[in-house]
Image (cartoon, rainbow, N blue to C red):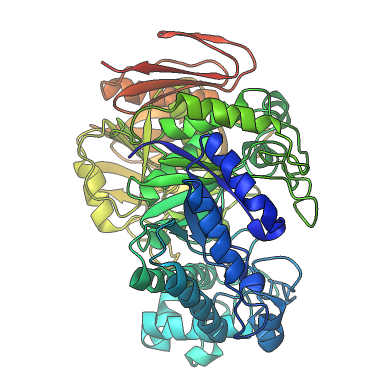
Length: 634
């Protein structure tokens, strides 16, 4: 599939006389795709049952007449006021018992069954009208599930749905009490109707209860999305996507993606650096106008997996955003770098947000490709530059390294982090960054993967619950396998299993105790490498060969053959060194990359991506700072 560019557009925001000119300029800029409609419920159906399709018909025709392809979004993320007035209990309730009111977006509870009927009805109306439209070449369901902390709802509708979910899952309340260990603190429930939502308890609720609620909440998103996809497919053969948001982990994106054709995500490198990456002050200052060198790439690789090879960026930042603690403009050249980086990881399309900066409402400080007066903004020239450079097919060959990412593990860590600021995402992202600093390309795999053929290294950090089938598959993998810390630390209901963790076939090691350590007291480690453990350390016992010991004399990493257990969270440089030793055992060549220089192989091309403001030399030649160097692979 050819690499293409696109843009997000809101014809309802602009005079109709302007639409044809906008479409002409989009086509001249080299754009192919235009996403519209995802926030337009109130204009399409201003009053219940009264539809005004004429403006949307004409907008689609105007774009199609210019040779553009439309991505049509279902508008369920923005129910109009009349829907809320009719169903006031459809609003989500936060953990403190407060309603998430009308006046913005994403103001609904996934569990509210009557709102689901309304959502199905408007989706059906969209799909029936435009399913056969030749200009509508793709669909998007809703918009950014989970953005603004909108997955977990503590409403009456959620309470009822949670109880029904528990009934289906456990069958009897005695089975639930046993699985959750409710004998502790006399928490046994006499019936499913006695189970409440795990908020507003005196101290922390039972971790098994919270994890079950997190799984339930994810299930609600999955079924809500599946409902929309099923309706669209009754009327259209065009592919269906959803646009996920960076570091939103409250629902299982793999499960949502199973009902879709394309995974897409919304990439805002400068906004994410300030409020999602978790970078320290020095890194934020260094990359304030470029974004983190690994954060976007991580999500590119994640969504390539979620989309089973097909993925897009539905929203790419082209200038300053409006929502981060600090909102600088990107360095000249960064919009081009971000775009080509996505293509390096196999993107089919990169769509910029948005065509024209809005002069009103919440996003008026959010830059587009055009200024509010329709003059070009800086990002437009870089988008046109990429359009002129586009060549080659989208796609990515299998990488030599696999990294497992598990949303359920993220929830388990959130339920029981065992230390302030510790997160599963942080651990996995640190691992990913270390691999990239070694010049390695990475595939991110779902936790139900059972075949690791072709991977020289497989990593499963922090995978809190490891089913027996996955343990067997990891033990049978031909390459080097690294698991831990906290791998297999809990069973499926958050209980410590016996035999004690990690209980991996072929690796004689037991985690005897765990501890978290202060950020200002890192623990020296020696052995295969010398460096420091931070945040999380496990004490290991058993016959496996020690690889690392800490200053107390305790073993914190062991191996047997190709199977390694790492029982410590290592600092960045130590982790790079440790993974380098395992990569060399796997027969992989590594190159330690400086600063913000990274490398990605597609199978036919090698991309050198430079996030630094200064140039770097590479084995294939110099690369500008910031900049991209593409070379063919032989």
